Amino acid sequence: MPVIEAVGVSHRYGERTVLSEVTVRLEEQRVGVVGANGSGKSTFARLLNGLVLPSAGRVTVDGLDTRSQGREVRRRVGFCFTDPDAQIVMPTVAEDVAFGLRRRGMAKADARSRVEKTLVAYGLGGYQDHPAHLLSGGQKQMLALASVLVTEPALLVMDEPTTLLDLRNAQLVARVVAGLPQQVLLVTHHLDLLDGFDRVLVFDEGRLVLDDAPAAAVRHYRTLMT
Ligand SMILES: Nc1ncnc2c1ncn2[C@@H]1O[C@H](COP(=O)(O)OP(=O)(O)O)[C@@H](O)[C@H]1O
Ligand SMILES: [Mg+2]
Image 1: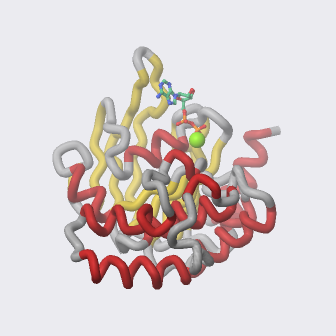
Image 2 (image 1 turned 135 degrees about the vertical axis):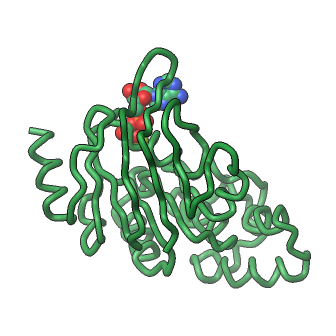
Image 3 (image 1 turned 90 degrees about the vertical axis):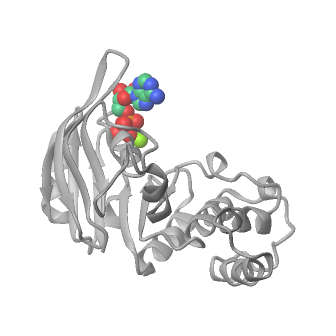
């Protein structure tokens, strides 16, 4: 599994400090992140692939610095947003999945067969030429996932991927995530998704306040919220 390291990481948006002094080393296959709205979870998630750069401290993935080696980091770290519309960039389903592969220089014919297999794997077989923006919410999230996973990232960072979905689609995404061979860092308010995770981080007001097994972390989070 990749090794994610944050050392003395703080982040400010303007004058406002939203993450303070986070130091953590993560190398487990399944890492969860929980915390109240505004506690800094998304900022932390975005630091891991260089979408956000730390105001202080440093973040590395397998020793690659997100600041100076962002491009190499992003080859290893896939990112899945809460809102798939933030992520879907191409007009049709197949084009969207092919986009990342072609950017990585894969030949068109190779890309086509990879795209087909991927669409079938994520329940989108037969939707190749379908306009991406006309998919249902659940299908859009599967497309966003497919477009990230087709590039085979070693680490997948997911920021509340089930928050906008109904229960059925949330369960579908949860099943896909559970079956992934790669390392996953999942930010979520759906606490049952964390069953069986190796480790769960609890954020509160920009600080990493607990780092423990899922049951203990969820208990602490519930206490913070009452
Ligand atoms: N781009 C931004 N500019 C200014 N403030 C931001 C920005 N993104 C997030 N924030 C603020 O930073 C704090 C932490 O946000 P975030 O990391 O999104 O927390 P969470 O994901 O836990 O809800 C919040 O108070 C939020 O309003
Ligand atoms: Mg968030």
